[in-house]
Length: 110
Ligand SMILES: [Zn+2]
Image 1 (tube, rainbow, N blue to C red):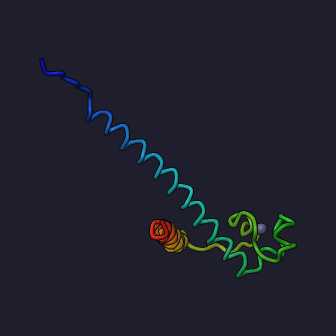
Image 2 (cartoon, rainbow, N blue to C red):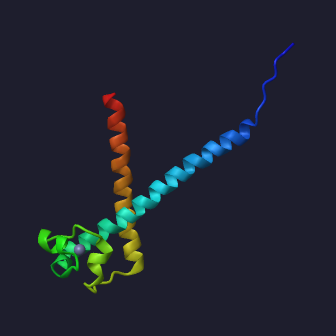
Image 3 (cartoon, helix red, strand yellow):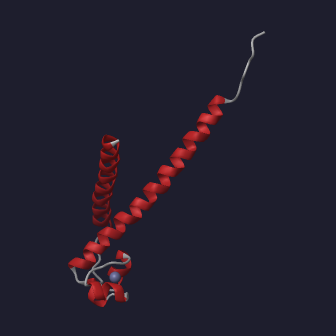
């Protein structure tokens, strides 16, 4: 007698794929936010937004150490939405490269 073991393999694989995609999406969402934060931190540093930032931490550090967009909010130096998107893209790209490099060098040392 042949023992037949069956399960819905496709379903399980689909679940795993969805889980993985969800994890990656959460990570990329966080990275986009981080990219935007970095962009505005740089803007804030360039235009000395920290000097008049509501956060005492920024004023003490003499650079933006908090939330970039918030630091820039009182600066009134707007950048066009498409420029903001391009710059965020660039920073996001760097973050991903760093992550990949870190992962690869981690593998090499093992
Ligand atoms: Zn600030």
